[in-house]
Image (cartoon, rainbow, N blue to C red; front, top):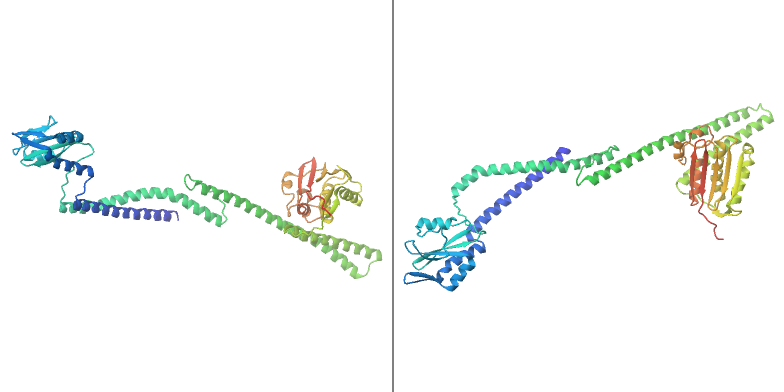
Length: 464
């Protein structure tokens, strides 16, 4: 792929070079033909030539002496020009501002040499004119004008083109190929890296590509960021998948345990060789295990409804102080928690919020039970109700930092809950219930110092 991109770019550059060579050649030949057919010259050269040819009208010969009109002298001064007037023998018989190195006698070959080449000085171009039996040389100082003499032989030109034309074209193509190769490498290397990175993303290979300098730097940099984010999401997905499988395994185990118990006691009841007390005891066990299975199924159903935000809330105005106090009292009335140390206080006697009493009770009970269930029996639990918050804190074992990070995940069980009955959904369900009310919950904890759960409520009293 990498070499193919470079070769394609190189072929494109060579094609452009060939086209440019043919176009330049055609333009060059066209200009030569145009110049030869139209006798094209720049306006400056044309004006100087015309000035020299027309200057004869300002030259007069009287009694063998040459003199110039005032207008002619003025034109010579404006043109920064000098003039030599020659007779038929080539002898100078007059002039104006004649240079010191100018000849006094010109043979035909001298005239040709002076006209063709700059033999007076490097900045002077000599023009030739004639008037009756007189001829004259006019030198005009202008460094921008240069006379070039061409000697072109068609046959020799074609021979030269045949010998060196192909070599020139090949050399041009080689130079173009060399430049195109280096330029193509610089251009296609990051492009190949870009394509390679996209292929890696397609194949879920989240590798980093070295960020090049230049045009593609922000593109490759952004792709590397995307790759890093996708890698993080992939790791999170795998972690959640493992947790989900573990959770399903735990729930399956929790379901099998009461089912096995129900089946065993049902078989004993079916035998009929039991006393009434034993029958009543086994029936109670079967009922208890059935209720436990029902709770498991209810949690599964509730967590799915919360996940899809399909929880129907029956909202009503509730005095949150009295509501939370009753939860604490009911907890202390339970046999397993009758000796628990729970302290309750509130910032006011009445704080009203619009909540679903059934689901909000379940959320608060979950956090309160966790403080009692996962700590020693002498743990101190404080429940404080404020205007917009319910705070449950304890001085128990605390939660490990790794567990605290995942405390609200649906498929996560902390290290201190491994031997506790339940589905592992309680904290996630409580969080979702509170958020369904428009509130939020946060947990802070330090190991061996305790845990604090802060429930923030935003649903005010609803007008009747």
